Image 1: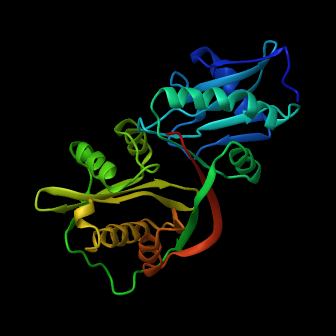
Image 2: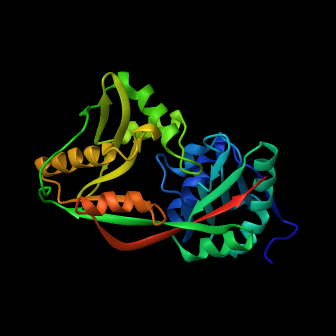
Length: 284
């Protein structure tokens, strides 16, 4: 093992921003979660640990919980000339202890590269399911637009209800805090809500991409699921994308979510073949 007397680990702090940015930009073995903010912006939240050899930063691992009972692996990075397994073995046990002490129930990692999955499995994570990618080229909907409720653009006054709908619609590890959702809203191209009477019962949030847009979040209150609300929101989005001239819409969902897959495929989305394993570790 590389880890020896001159190698140490410590919690990161805000003064480490440049070191973290250098790791992310210039090293080969970097996992950055598909997140609403870059890894360096999680500095100031814990657990976020650095590995050092002497005064040189050789690795980083960030896993701050959000919401409080779930922690995604936000960042793992190791310099190219140090075995990444050694850096992981130095940092992960410290991060895991911090998560347990904070009362976090679940750790999760979305593996974009096989090497990260190997590290996670060696630490006791198990593959729970996978995230798949679907795409839809520009084109009209078959049968046109239909909706059992009103669909309209969201405004700032709606964001509290949007956050409540989001929290109610998802189970761990897919829930987001209001703070992270605020970051998502800031990056959105379009947000629409489904409204029954004066109640917001669902919403969608879409972000811009190079060739069009990505449906990043679709949520419907549990009591309204199965009533065509999600379909209406996606139909409205497809119509918006066609009017804007977007070449493609994309979306991610779990390969175990049969209802979600059926909804998207019914509206002209097809699987691209990309699949990313999701690893989970129970901490209780």
